[in-house]
Every structure is written in C-alpha cells, then in structure tokens.
Image (cartoon, helix red, strand yellow):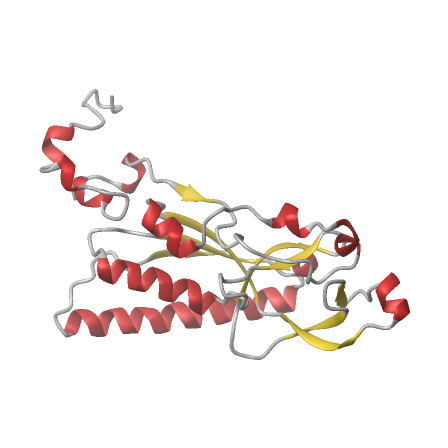
Length: 231
C-alpha cells in the first residue's frame, strides 16, 4: 500500500481491457494519474551494448578479448523497446574510431595508447571527432578501454540511431513514455571531451524537441515522446 494507506494499484481502475495489452503498449493500461515513481518501469543498463568488437581506445583489452565483457545486452535497443523496456542507460562519446593503417609487427605486439589494433583485420584505428556525431559506447579507462557499440548490420551505432529508433517506436505506440539517461563516457573523463559531448547532446535533444513540437502543431499525436536526463 501507499504511505497514505491507499492501495498502490487498483488494477480494475486502470486496465480496461487486459487482453489488449502487450509488451509494446503496456503503459496504455496504467492510469494517467499515476506518477512515475509509482510505476515499476523495466529498464536496461548500458543499453546500447548488444554488439561490439575488440576495436577500442586502449591496448591491453585487445589481447584479453575484453569486448566480450563489454557486452551487456542480448537485444538491440529497438528490440528492447518491443520487449517492454522503457528506461534506458546510454553512454556516449564524441570521439570515434576510424581505420588508420595496416599494422606492422611492432604494432601487432603493442598497440599505441591512442590507436588500437584489431587482430582480425590487422588494422590500427585512430580516435577522431568528426564535429557532428556522438557514438554509443561502454568503458572509459586506459586499461579496460572504450568499446563502441555496433548495429546489427555491423555499422557503428550513433546517438542519432538511438533517437530515431525511440522516436519511431513512440510514433507507432503513442501511449508509451521513455526515460533515457545520456552520460558522457570519455576516456579518463577528459574534461574537454566531456564538455563537447554534453553540448552536442543538448543540441541533438533541442533539435528533437523542435521536431516534436512541429508534429503536435500538425495535429499528429505522439504523446510522451521522450523524457530525457543528461549528465
């Protein structure tokens, strides 16, 4: 029961047709009078890390195949949405790994601090900021490395990919609400990269908010499009 003695949930007042609910629209069965802190909301930790590989911004982890330890999910974010998850933990980085050159024998033995060798392709990668994108990732220390998330087609996963999945899901299921925590995760908490990442994240969220406003102005109902926190 609640602190005031009332029942926490009276399902007869909140669900009009139990059998019409599914993982995709379960929030439609909850009264609009309910506060967020009165609902058990399923969520995921390091939500973007379904797929990654040993191509990251450190050297030690590559030899230990630590990318398997960075995998925290068995579903991609769009699949998590369909499975009922409504709270997401997204780690982001402004830096991105791009191919630099084929590794020589010494680089195969010891990757440089800012370039990492992938043994599968024998390629050294450098960290770069393209000035526009943010990339989903896991990890931020020099020993463990920063692992970058990948989509099902093998392409790197950007924040724009994540926001598009969530927006499209909510367009299809306007009764749902998503809570998303974005956190800058840069190597050793580099202050400048944290600042750049946060500023770029705010810009993307502002642009998304303007898009949402236009959809409402056009009479398109997609309620509760995103509730976002940024650290």
